[in-house]
Image (tube, rainbow, N blue to C red; front, side):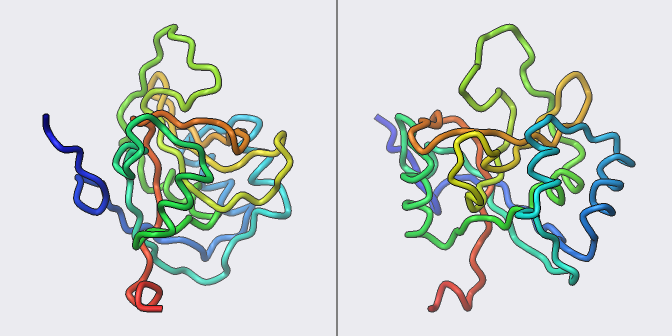
Length: 184
């Protein structure tokens, strides 16, 4: 039986994303200029006072991997995932990263749009930005995910409680800690 490879010894997708330097309004306008649609949760998250933007530009290195790549071959809850990530050179993303990744990743492959019921699961082809939870309220969006449906790019918000089990194949984006943070 082939041994499953676990991060950091597994294939990942890395991107360097420039973040900041735009006001919330400029960010929304830029999303609109690229015909990026948002769902109600995404709009709610972006318009909330907890969503802040940095005045200065900075770069973040992101790492995209699956729940299984973190060693959870049967899936895991976000608290389990966050705990595992804290033991690596990865960390949670700032909430502001979601719209910036969406603006950079314009060639996302089409997600499966068949009629398979995927309620209470990450949609096929979606990528969730793993960010700090800004509200414990189960009805408040927990973060953003990226999706492409029928040729249209989406920046969507999602809700999930701490008991929700993410599937092994669900794709997540984390930030890579800087060398300085790894040493501390």
